[in-house]
Image (cartoon, rainbow, N blue to C red):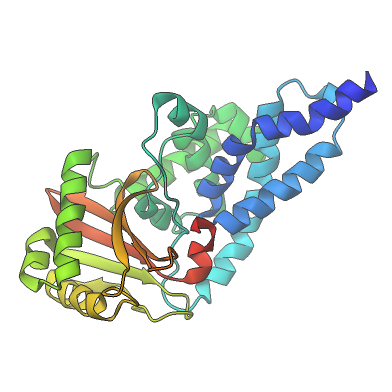
Length: 297
């Protein structure tokens, strides 16, 4: 019996690892921090008498959420002193089947993750657990040590705040429309064609970039189609290896069409995600900090 128990503990965790990792990433916006949270959760799970746990997934979700909740406070302090604009770490994903979506939760775009940085840790946890993973407010309340009504209000406040941002305020964009805009941007950027860039960029477009002080990137958001088109055309001329075997690939960034710049040796040097409205790009999020792209290699 003890042998069965010793096998069941790690197996229960491993069976839910992808789900737990998905929860942690959406709460933290960082792959590295999410992995740290999972490692600590695994250690805590091994110390638990699992015969007393009625629902392993719910129990593990509580552990991971509390660990992430604790991390969010210190992460905010670190991000406030970050060099330039802090953007979440991107994920390159494939097209999700309904079964995968049910397992991993609703896709969360890079734009939405960036907007969620404005939320308090409690608002973010309530929003992610309820709106992304469809967890009930009673369960969330127990995890956050709040009442169900208070937790419902947290999620409601978070929902209102993200709706004003580019990720949700624009509504649900047709995937074909999004893809066509990204392809048009890629063609224009590769050719350094400013007029073609102006045609695909919204007049009020905002360019966000994260180099972390490691590589050159705009320290503050760049506003307006004229400035963004000239910035992108200039980057196309300077991107390392852009004309020496590098490729600008179409990829799925956090479930939405985006771009990845691969160097001749296969390394990913940049990932760009986009928000699109009315066939034009309204926001672009360029992650070029190599520390945030290492997990993609």
